[in-house]
Image (cartoon, rainbow, N blue to C red; front, side, top):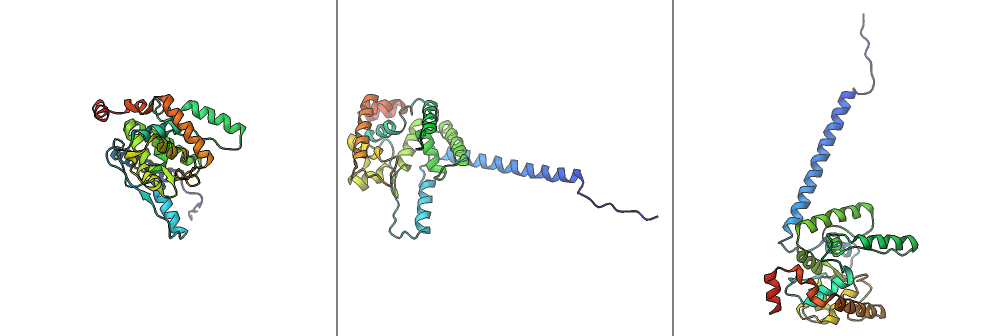
Length: 259
């Protein structure tokens, strides 16, 4: 008597083993990515990043489009070496609750959400911590994936770095013009001086171009930039000037800067 062979789908047990192995592999990859991201953020607490993801993306874009005249300008400056006017100008312009929040300004997020429901113009509510995470590790554009990663890296940055380090890195990676990154390169480019010598008005002009740094110019300010910089100077005074950020510094550093 001949045995008949039954051909059909793979056995359920074999399929479960394949799915299980794939799940284990994906889990290991996810753990590896988490470990690498935590390590990267942790190292950058002490090591100054030579570039940011936004800088690399702009350089690649210039190469791809054959922009032979493009030049990337970036020069690191320690926060304590820069004028105290620039730090408070950035906080006044971008994130006045920076010393208080833990990465996210929920009141600003709720307000922006309400405005976006009523207007076609998109309003942002990103804190300095969020912008630092985005500029340093991610890419331009709007998507749920990027926003999710931005939130993840913001939590890492806020957990592993002190506030003074977040502000220092932000000062050095923020874009102030096409190919101009950081307050030192911007100060040299637009005012022919080091960021250590910036006055209150010059710092406010730099902070005023942050919403659209490739269209606005601190050295040739439009009416919008002049109005925004005047508003920033008023906000700086209302916050109490550079002393508003004194709590970000260890007591020993604050005493040395006050001498």
